[in-house]
Image (cartoon, rainbow, N blue to C red; front, side, top):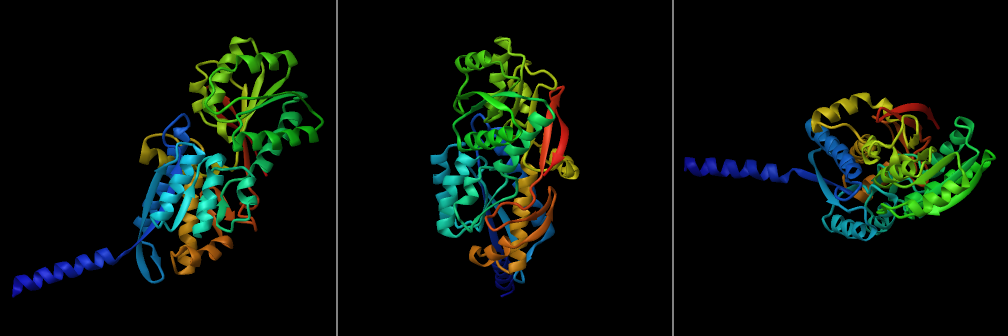
Length: 370
């Protein structure tokens, strides 16, 4: 009888273990392809948050829970992003952190909204994302209106730019950023002397750069990612274009120096990041200790997105999306990137912008503004 009692006790303990609620947080970004270093960055940030929550032993509604990261690769492709979104919905995730780019976040957001699942993007900046009227859509970074106009003002007021050429990669991110930058530029009385287009997998820019060179700009603004900007800088040098380049957070990574293959001069490239990550010094050190690499850009925001979602669940006393969503919409908390609270659309309130240049292949802070 004794051995049966022991067996029953073991089964009872096992039953308690399996009874522990699992809270699934989905994450989606491009972890393969030309901008995989950005996608892996946000995945790592989300993973750090999950590990921190489990180490803490979070209790929701009186029950201790275990958080689980469900990580998916959307390849930076809008169609793949919708497939991934449906997979996460079918997998009954409690919330989603992602996607990485505006072009993937916007189509995926419709699927999460239909399912009533809260989504916080740690990196998507297109105003379209939160203008759709989805009560499930949030972001923890400033949008392109703030980012583009801050860059436009800085280009004229601090860099003395008067004649500017703009190029976008025809993605939702690139087009939106160039549109808002152009508004900020015109507000300051500067002129756009050339408007050209490329795509997000392009590698040959000779035709558009030759046209731009003829317009004699004192600044080239690129709306796109560093995987394209790096080779573009190489070809600018080959064409004898000794001109500065500016862009948004898509080029605001040390990776651009490697991709430019030695063609990028100190102080030639200027960019802005939608946030004030320099406040997250301890996070950066912890990230390097955990993964053996440096933060690219958005890992701290992915970390804050997970933590904010978890805090809303705790305050609501439930991990059920319908129950914690109203709490998330009204939350006010402090993340590693600063204060987090959302406006009526789901945009972060009072988003911070950090402007950088590069020296010795490393980002150097120029200014922090709002």
